[in-house]
Amino acid sequence: MFKLNHLRKSHLAIAAVVLISVISSADATFAQVTYKNLVTVPDPVPSDGSNPPDSPASPAPTASPASPGSHSSPTPTASGFVDFSGVASVNAKEIALVSLVSRQVELAKTPRGAKAVAKVLVAQTYHWSAHQISCLNVLWDGESNWNFQSTNKYSGAHGIAQANPASKMESVASDWRTNPVTQIKWGLGYIHDRYGTPCNALAKKHWLGYY
View 1: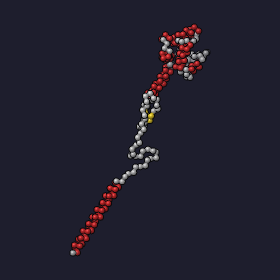
View 2 (view 1 turned 60 degrees about the horizontal axis):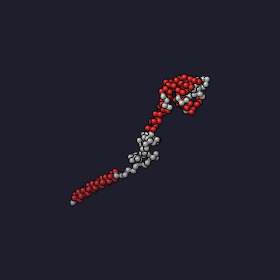
View 3 (view 1 turned 90 degrees about the vertical axis):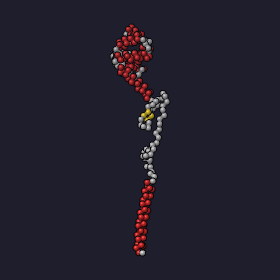
View 4 (view 1 turned 30 degrees about the vertical axis):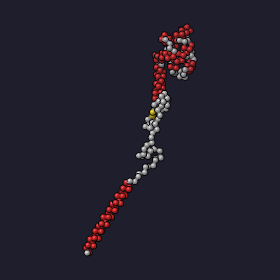
């Protein structure tokens, strides 16, 4: 009888130990599951106004397309590039025009180039014949040899057309001292307004020695 009671107590002790182990394991499992299911709170928004990490970026504003023929300013895009739509073609024309004028000025700094530029300007504005161009060449050959720096030390006449006083060319542009195209434009206008054609101006020069 004593042995039977002792055996029962041993079995109860073992059962108690097993029960405690199961409960402990269950508690640990519950704790782990509860911990894993905790909701992660996003980091606060940075003070510089940028989007927090792992948060969706705000939609970038899109630029409205420029209407045809409009002259708008370049628009920055979300990618950091600049959108030149609507202005690229206009700016390209302006740049090309500046480049053309610059080339004309450099070309006209030589007698041969000055004659070529004068021929173009005549064709654009006055439409004089080839015979009139020949008279113009002879006229300004005698005046300055088409040298834009030519100055008459006695009269003060200056430039390709020998304007006297030289300040008359101010009516075209203020750069008349150094810009041969300005001088040519003034000289062509002077001939047109005063004589009608270069051949008439040349006839006056042959007759009186000046025009």
